[in-house]
Image 1: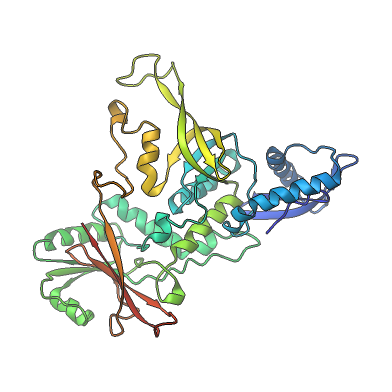
Image 2: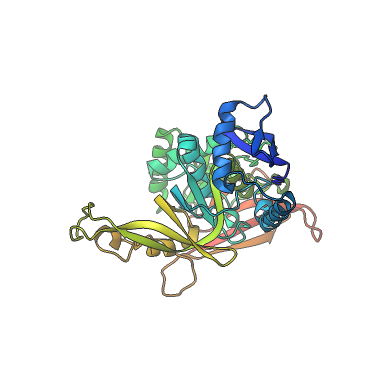
Length: 419
């Protein structure tokens, strides 16, 4: 973990051509001069200093003893945050403004930050607000982490094909100089969708679309399914569709699974920070609006339009701080519906009358879909090469091997009912 001991050393970080450059600068307090080693390119120094002093302020004459105490105090306050970010240092001052504000720092929010910084670089400031850096209740780490191309919508199939390629090369895309290459443990095993006589035609139509877009799938009759997967009961199965490439489920390779959502999340987050994105620990609790008289909107009286201006974020010290932004992206998982209502989405007029159909399952008055996951000890069950099976009734299961102290290493099956 890097510590800013500014009495003697100021640590400069700057990303150049997707590689992290870190060098030490010696600070002379008496003359307010920064002595820069010759091996550091001057272009890197100038850009890095501008970023560094935007966070920490310009150099000021200060008693070295007092400065040391202040720095140590700030480092202690930020220790928890740094531990949850793989040692990547995050500036401790709350940003007052940004170009893009991403609300939610899970795998979706971190992916948004990553791609924005990859495409725009230092020309775009990106701030990610995440209320819980431990991600204890985040959708990312609680998911089964399936990767598949077996969809009926072309856009979903194309995105998943790209996602599989990204996962295969994550060590290249998400590497950060000075850190071990990320290992998201992608090991595709395929999905197997099963259909009864009633759904066989739809499964066949879906497979046709998937093949046209480049997905590798095979259709298997009930007889062929039994030959390929002897453990499978095919009595009420008419047809199956099996993914041959770029599909699988996600967890830990040491546990016998396919790829690890937790590792992917932290690799995306670490890379985003290394390329200049800022992560803030806090919860978006409200938005402030600003009248924009020059904007015309359908159903809104001329000169009365109010647009989003600032987000109010409650940080972990209990303070509510504003941050001004040009664009806000809601990526708050199950809480996205709540955040959207704060932005008047679903409670306004015309286009704003359409709500974001995402809710946390906490109220019986809200229509939602529950998921129940069970872990079943099954010594003689399907082996490590079994696919992620989705049955036509809505149940699915996947292989997962756990080596617990109370059990011998054996097969565990995760199942769920959706309704």
